[in-house]
Image (cartoon, rainbow, N blue to C red):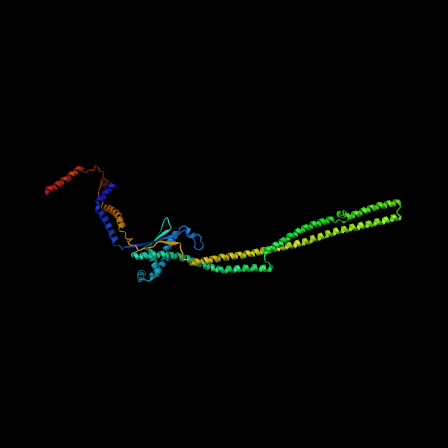
Length: 461
């Protein structure tokens, strides 16, 4: 089908098309006028997506999640919010609602749930694309009822949010309340274990006692080093009568000089008077006496050095024993300190866990009593003055397009049901005959015929 044929069909079937077009427009206008008027009340809610917890001051991570606004829309249109509206307005007690419920359900089911589902059918929620504002609208035949329901849904949504948070906080509060008893018992047990161990070992201040004993150990170690040096020195000096200290003693050296001079004197007397002379015998007795004094003095000095070396070795042995005992004591104190540290850490961990649970218990208790929400009503619902439905102007414009389309379709359908030859192409297509020529009257002839007809009518008159 070409455009020329399409135009010819519309011209030939114009009565059908115009009739269908007019019928659609007239029917639309009649329906729009006869339909009951519907009124829509709107309220706007702003959700603070950057809200912080009023108790902790920390940002709430849930508000940063994708789809948070859609979640709020789902809550607004949830059964729980609708049930809050039913309860707050007391709709179950209205005779009209009871009669309508009995008529539609036969009295079966719960009237609260039925009313909630019925109210949700007329509720529309639209979140904004570029902001966190959500618009709630309710449509009803009564403008006052529409405004009341829109306002009630907004308030019920806020109350639902508060109830959800309060219920969750109440459950957490009950959990932490149970945990506090267990954690308190663990803390008391850890404190008792620490106190019993300190009392058993007689520990008052572990760090101070360990520091004192460590200082004492260092002092004994220093004294032992000094004693070892003194013992080595004393032992090196105590080598009998030939010890350097003995030989270098002035008195011994003096006696040695006397012995040497007396020996010289005795040799001279032996050469002069002989060994039997009294002077020789006397000199020999004096020499022996000096030698005895020298030997006695050497032995005395050598014994003193040996005694000093023995005393130094004894002191060194005593210091070594004291050092060993002090080491064992310090190690024991370190072991006790390690055990005390373990017990102290157990007490600290139990205290920390108890404090955290107590803090969360107090926080959840406050949350369960909080009635704050991150929602603010920007525009409250007011009673509408103009109906939102039916939209006569919009319906009329739509009927023009729909009527025109249906008129064209009707003309085409009528043509298909009763096919006519409209153009030369139809002869070739339908009759399968070639078209030799197309004769059309010239425009001048058409004008002449029209003039003759008008002139003939005037003559007859």
